[in-house]
Image (cartoon, helix red, strand yellow):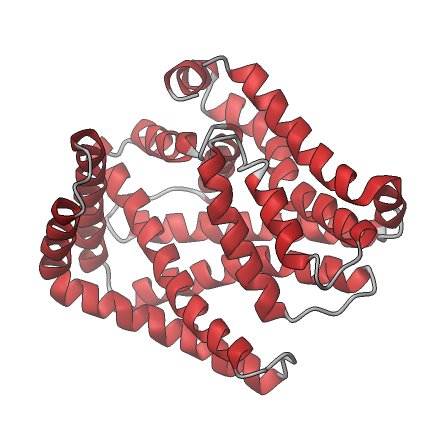
Length: 330
């Protein structure tokens, strides 16, 4: 499949859907957003990248491999760019493993580092999904300081508890997963892909078990900080547009639409993200405000990744890897 036509179609869909929903009035509302908010949103993304780079350094340092903050940051940004520019984010993992391998890690060790980061992300979102759903079902639309502290403590405790359970009982979990795949009659090729993911999962758990408890706790705290920064940008945009929607609801909306977007198989989840966003926020926002919020949010959390990440990717990863991503994955 040709890359550039698919990429251009994805960008056009991402812009035409909000314009079609909010019209020119949406652009008018977009101009009402202060430049300081846009700059602040971009700065929040950069800060999140730095937290992820620090997380990578801690993971590598725990196994005797050391990397400077600048190189770790370039690895993170390059991987984010590749994930945003390729269908279903397939290029992110390949770029991450390629750059760590070039740093001197064996490919299996680099894959284990990637698997550990994915595992920690999953163990953040699972407690977050449960806790925030409970808050919304209980009618807690306002986030007071005490509620925020309780939720943060619950995310940390839930994630660390899940890590401990996986470390103690990962073999039964993997065996149960294999039986489940057989029961549902998953196709052989797909089972092979899942099997490769499970092998990485095992490698990630092995890497996790080799780290000290304090290092693992700090890595997990950096994971939480990164995702809280990224998922709070939309809340600030909505507030700047003069609307008030629960932070908890906006967090869950982003989790849902970004997951659904991967099903479109277009770079950045274009189409699925915009349609899901519009459907879930239409009851609270008028069309013009919704269109403005969607464009501003997608700029900070998608288009900014492409703009800032492209030069760093080509400088550190090179055109050879990009050609492989285009023709081998796209």
